[in-house]
Image 1: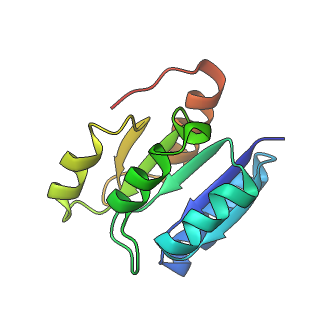
Image 2: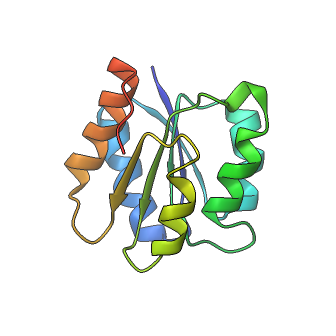
Image 3: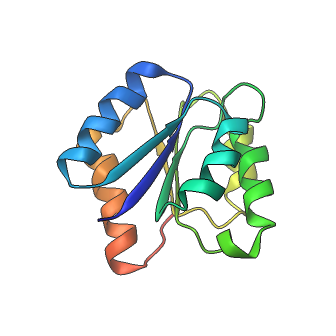
Length: 127
């Protein structure tokens, strides 16, 4: 069973994706801010992370920079899933070995789940 960590401060989004991934037999953990996400990645040791960029305490860019410093998580697949209004943050993470960058505005839940599953099955990363 694959494990996914969803880091997003929107309970509607996390609820939708928790159900979507659980239906695909993922073990799911949720962190509602970046600081909790830093704690969760070390404790839960996910196979993939679904990461929002705009969050309280530690934003997604800061979270990714911190996680990539740790050798255990240098190759951890991270799917960035964020709103289109944070363009500077998207540019900042493109150089941080993210697997996919998806927009909340134009992406359906099935597409997000497929991006995660594809990155885990093939090991291929796309930006």
